[in-house]
Image (cartoon, rainbow, N blue to C red; front, side):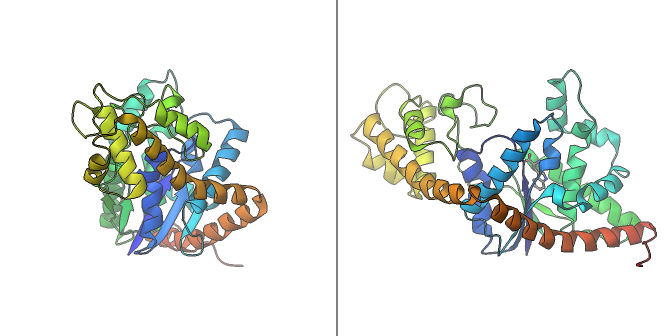
Length: 329
Ligand code: TRP
């Protein structure tokens, strides 16, 4: 069983990213051969400050390793280090209907907010399809928002296989049904997001413990004082789910423990549970980040493993397309 997934290097990662993706990526290493890529080329669909892109790419690499992605067991690599990605993307672009891309929900939403934008925003899902198909994965763990992109990758793979012969595994998207949906602490009706208007409701994995405690202390709660999940108590419900995600404890047990305490002690214990979760990650992150040479070597090893597989797939695609292979000197 083989898995591939990708994550954008932009934006400091938060607990929503952790419980929705990063933690699962680490767990899945026990069950599958995993390819995890930091998609820096996808980040270029919007203008990036070079120094900031460089920093956030290395930060994310260190954060993923610190969170348990084991570079010895998995291939952890930066997308731009493996040149097959844009090369296959071009080929797939030539067989992707323009209309399909124009109808992609993310494209429509993002392009509407922009006075002008590069065509990469339109072809983004094709590069994503290339990221996936190069590794012949059985499944691709993604969030709900990526379903259409996965559908497109499947369509492209099938179209290619039908026209040129079996070349790509047609991958299945796995959207975790049970993942805690972590909502913004200040606005529990929207998901915790890197692009939130205010930072106060977003817990970053690298927030210093005191900042993190303060954010939890000032999280919006609802009227009343009961620690229970209920549709009209979105704030408290979110905190209970977060507590459960951070400790692995069932939500009902948390509710009964804090049945008589009110919000104060509940929030204080939640803050300590989150601090306990992120502290070892932060410590390991600092160590990894202190040595850019070692971090670079980790990524070079990942790129080598990825390249070995990607080059094979691309060669097969070229051959099936009738592109003449260069003679080896
Ligand atoms: N588009 C994905 C996101 O924004 C990131 C991504 C790029 C990806 N390539 C991928 C995810 C390949 C899974 C597989 O979350």
